[in-house]
Amino acid sequence: MPRAEVKAIAAATYQQVWWPAVEDVQFEGDHLPVWEDGYLDPVTGEYLPTWEEALDELGDEPRHVVRFGAQADVKGVLGGSKDADQCIRYLGKYLTKSIGDCHEPATAAERRHVERLTAALRYEPCSPACPNWLRYGIEPKNAKPGMRPGACQSKAHKPEHLGYAGRRVLVSRKWSSKTLAQHKQDRRAWVLEILGQTDDDPSRYTWRPIKAGDASVPSITHRLLKQIGERQRWRALAQAPPPQDPSATERRAA
Image (cartoon, rainbow, N blue to C red; front, side, top):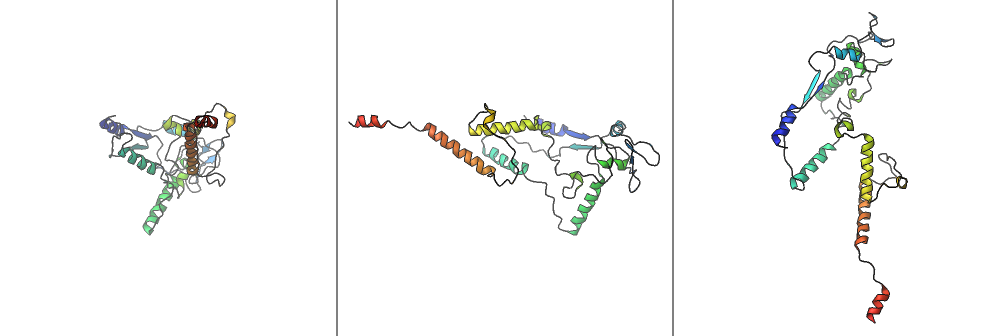
């Protein structure tokens, strides 16, 4: 694809979030909606609008719009080249880099900033089903008794996540067109290919998930190196010349 076309696609790509407004606080403190087959205002006795009804009342502007930044560095890379190797190393580094660990505040100003952000995230709705919608007079999607604004258990509200950890990648089928079961089947096929085997006899192998840190299982690096060594040994045996017949050697000597 031409670089100009890639840049044009990036410039035209955006994500809209159509959520109700959260500027008008209607319920807080002891004045909270009560549950009676749905949430209602304890003063007026009127039921709060449901999530679907609140969406129907939205205007022409989305709550959030996310776009790519102004910088779009597009490069062409040839497979097998030095640049390709560097790009793979770079992507491997940052695609596997953990961002789940929050920055540890080192100064009083940084600590105050984290406290302000945590306080704001406490009442910021994190999803359509977040209890915080009650604070703004809206019944959350799939509402149930016992919901309270500011008491959502999602990671997005916890100080150690600061709103982003756990939300880096969408459901796999949205970006790969494959379900989790299909990804598992791909990994199984890859293992069988490494072993040089087929899946003609499903009862030949036992497949079970391995928990991280299982002391009874060698590391993935050790397992892969062992399989590579086994494969090399099998290949060397297959390519070795057949052993000579001792009797034939004796006859030639005679």
